[in-house]
Image (tube, rainbow, N blue to C red; front, side, top):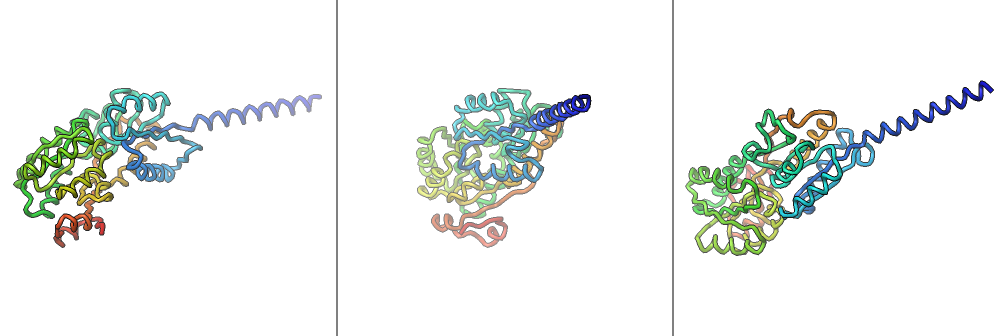
Amino acid sequence: MKRKSTGLALSAILLALCFSAEAQQAKKVARIAYLGSTAATASIDWKVFRSRLTELGYNEGQNITIEYRTFDGKVERLPEVVAELIRLNPAVIVAVGNEATLALQKARADIPIVMTSTSDAVQRGFVASLARPGRNVTGLTSIGIDNNGKCLELLKEIVPKLSRVAYLWSSTTPIAAINLKQTEPAARALRLDLLALEANESSELEKAFQTAVRKHANGMFVDPGAFFVAHQKQIVELALKHRLPAAYVNTRYVDVGGLMAYAANRSEQYRRAADYVDKILKGAKPADLPVERPTKFEFVINLKTAKQLGLSIPQSVLFRADKVIK
């Protein structure tokens, strides 16, 4: 009888240990939220992000779950999408772009946020400084003036007679007006006149291009922002229709027919975003994780588009391109 009781007690202990182990395992499953602009443009980034997490030892359904959301470039939808993500109580949120980062930061100050594809995070107020973010936001940010100036410089090499550039911007982008102001000195150094044209609805894009042509712009620069990314195909088609050589700071525009882009390497940014998520899940605080500036950039040219625009790309420019689409 005593032996039987001992056996039952041992079974009970083993059963309790099993339940305890299962409970501990369940606790280890961390929920990650990911907020991007559009599903079409974000799908490639998601793959890079997930791949890096796998390399770091995370597997969906085992020790992490990932909730993906987009707002289709419509900033007015952000409060609704952000509220939905917050209700899921994620351990960390990856925010793609200035618009998503701003909306999340306004909504909650206690959930860790890893930003990527943002610009001028300090000036925008996302972080106190690059070295010491000081808040619940960290990640990667570029300095808009650096990218924009280089983009204009390359566009002028491609279009030697470039004199007036239409600067397409949208007030739906948090720092578009600042980007424009900061780009003006670079334009002056290149002896370029900037013509600011605002568009906040897809129906306003055609009018913006018509105005550019009417005011004798012979080139265009498209400010970064979720609204334009959501309408990149329309913008690229309008640039061809109005025969305006256009420069972008997102290589996805060139993939759908844009002339050229100079931008931070997106794959590298999303790999680094996964590294930040890993550190936060292991206990690091965003306030203590220095913000990084991109170190890898891509210069991409679409020769097919250049031909349609009647442009001959100098060999000196082609040699510097990281990717040439023929």
